[in-house]
Length: 142
Image 1: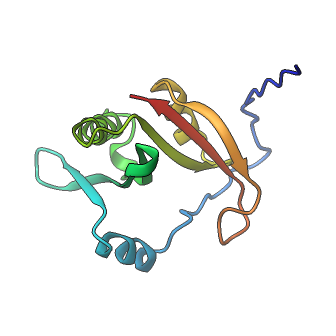
Image 2: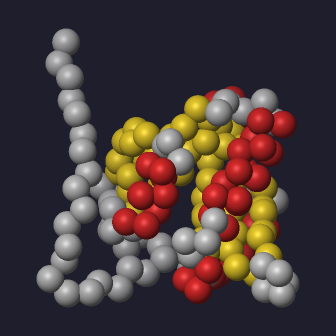
Image 3: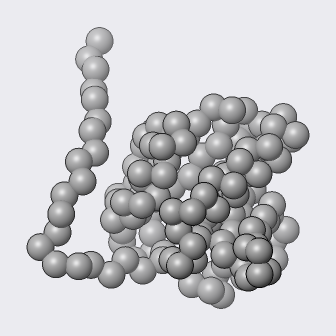
């Protein structure tokens, strides 16, 4: 058998790059109205600082995280970890065994977050997003 190892190397770009979120506000609203699992985190003043929404695939025993977003002023303060843990606990209550999500190749913060939380790279799609961006897929057993 052949073995393939994949390694991600962070490369500094010659100039700053603006990465746009791959889903519009209208797409997010339509997705939420479908009745998927939806979690919100608030800070002490009651401001919404981020959200995670996901749907479960019972036949795959999988929680698919569609969106994990933290306001830029609140990043690197643990809110993403709190949301992920809440999603994980919800998944365990539903007897799910894995969590999975996708990330744009340009989304270094999310890729680093995934690795920090024990997610493993499990695939990619070269034309996943409407804007032509490549998606990387990450999964973790729970």
